[in-house]
Length: 189
Image (cartoon, rainbow, N blue to C red; front, side, top):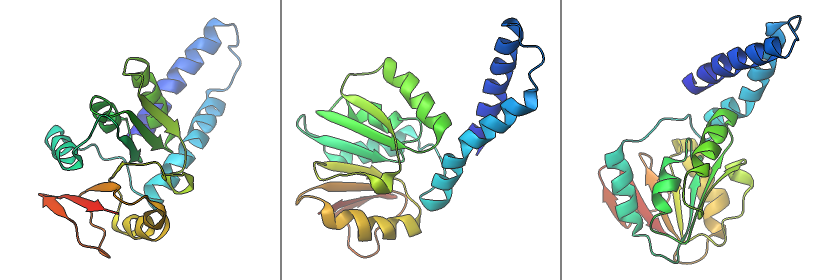
């Protein structure tokens, strides 16, 4: 949850500074701290239910992209996209890359990065379990084992035939991967 602490610190300092320069010297900085903490609650929920933000190495991203075998017509989703790195890398090779993130600091960071990225890359705020992936050609996920079971139970049955699912570090134990490289697993619906 380091991103949360950093977010609170940066936004807190900027908010207090802005209020001071705008003439609101009497605003209690603790109020700003409480608001920033409340903004972190969705990220804590996501960390518990699907997995915390743990950045993957560039090598792991290359492996994931290789196994995904992206096509210029593919629609790609990254579940719990964190800072959006994989979304922006995928966008170079596909029609549309969409990442969902529930942690507000990570979502905001991804949206800022989106401003300087390709038009076909999008970071969306949302709970990964409440989205529709019926048009997905490729889904990237880096979810904890319990969340992978939930993915298989709730998302897998609704995927179109041929959808490729690339999982980083954790397997879908209910099915056998069609390919595996290191700790990256490729499945096909």
